[in-house]
Image (cartoon, rainbow, N blue to C red):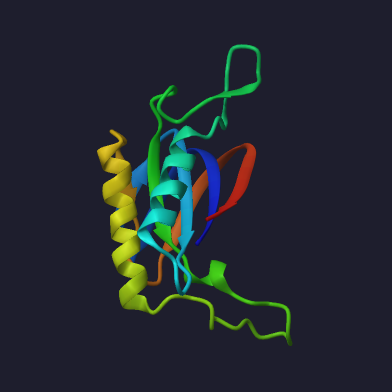
Amino acid sequence: MKSVIQRVLDASVTVQNELIGKIDKGLLVYLGIQKGDTEEQLAWLCTKIAKLRMFTDEQGKMNLSLKEVGGELLIVSQFTLCANLRKGNRPSYDDAADPEDAQILYEKALILFEQMGFNVEHGLFGAHMKVSYTNDGPVTMMLEA
């Protein structure tokens, strides 16, 4: 399981020119599910993201979590995070979970974040999406479970 987490001032996702998810200050999370990923890994990853201190305090130090700043989440499925680029020039997606399995874990991630009390917006699993955002910092981190 791989994720790219971006601190944003705003973010949105559209599918076929229809806005389907939009947040203000918070985290844009791209989530890639790999073969063999488990619910336990997902729970760890979601809890870790919720507790990451990616927001600055009054002294300008990254000391505050998403909850402490009242931030929102935009979660976007992204199987391309599972690409293997080591051999040749064409990405291999052999490590990506089957779509049915990945969708189950992706939807559980949404539920887990909602249960933690966050406002959660999301993309459309398996769709071609256009994601727009204003990266704050820029601050972008990667997390694997």
